[in-house]
Length: 222
Image (tube, rainbow, N blue to C red):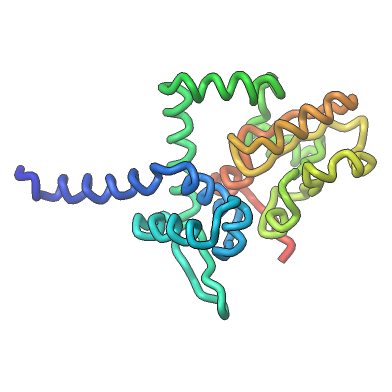
């Protein structure tokens, strides 16, 4: 088959998707969008980028059909174009990177495992524990992300507020912490801080986006 055939056309478009993923800022923007719909201004503040730079990265993601937009008043809002598929793509990218790139493995060991070397709780295990009311689920993301969507019955204590709000956590009950995804540092830091204070605490295996993408129930405040 010639290079202009259907296979080439598919690969050409897949290459555009791959190129869109080829920048750390765009990967981070996708992580933020996996929490819920955001404006360019909000994404700019979250990712610590200029408005112009954020807008440019989002346009690249939009051309690759990884995000889509809608207008509300004066604001253009962005969302993932297919939550489950984009979240799965990001997760697959992480798995390949951890297996094949030594530097990723070193960071995972030196930073993440140093703070929590215990096996995380799987989604299936947490579903069972929630059904039996055996654990307190702790969401350590910022409140505005929690409002957009969270695990059923989760208690929201952002990491920055954890120390002064320890009294809200039952001391004799196991705590399962989660945040934005597998490379989000918030839950690792929360687990380390709570263990030092005597809490029985573990992490969820990934985060809110993966839970939602798996079709498991979520709640929102709005």
